[in-house]
Length: 229
Ligand code: ADP
Ligand code: MG
Image 1 (cartoon, helix red, strand yellow):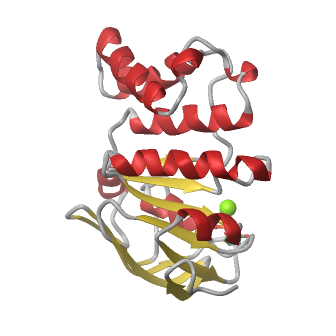
Image 2 (image 1 turned 180 degrees about the horizontal axis):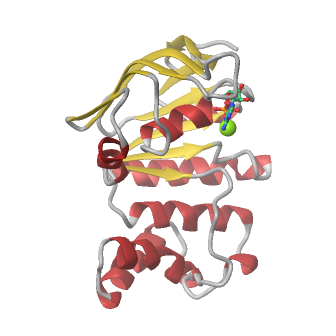
């Protein structure tokens, strides 16, 4: 569950706040889209939710843990274990296989043993349709496959909430459906998902609920078929 209350984020260098009082809730296991054009504040919102960005006012609650404006790095770190982010740039390690990309964080951050980390990573890659690509390096994977490796990698940390920053933007439009199917597969495991996008068609086809972000504020929300551009 995500509950965001009156969230305000100002960047020191910017005249206008990037987020100006954002409030919304996402129930556990739901798949929700944040729609907005470039500059609306989507990435800022996701970075706040994952604890990468301090914020100036408001609260973020994830599965019973609340972080408040002014909380320092320790407060923000409580979000790290609960919330995963699939960044827009994906940031896969080019010199590591798909499997090794997925075992690095569990081994380094959680101190998991190799065999244990590999077993779970292999299971996740298999569920996302990448059983045959475990040993492949990122340069030999398609854009859609790299995307799924990045998603599997985020899931290895067992987040309760997974955020995606524009998962379709770098892909061919025909791969929208592939991303949509992946989100539905992840949904089966009960993970709460929030997907930022500027792609109305994708949001309408994939999400159960849509939040429209404009100029750092949520201006509308509703069922995908009901919300208009
Ligand atoms: P989106 O992801 O929807 O394109 P962003 O969250 O990246 O939007 O940006 C929201 C606003 O915050 C924009 O006006 C952007 O220029 C500004 N912004 C984003 N990151 C920074 C930063 N590090 N410093 C100053 N301003 C920023
Ligand atoms: Mg962005």
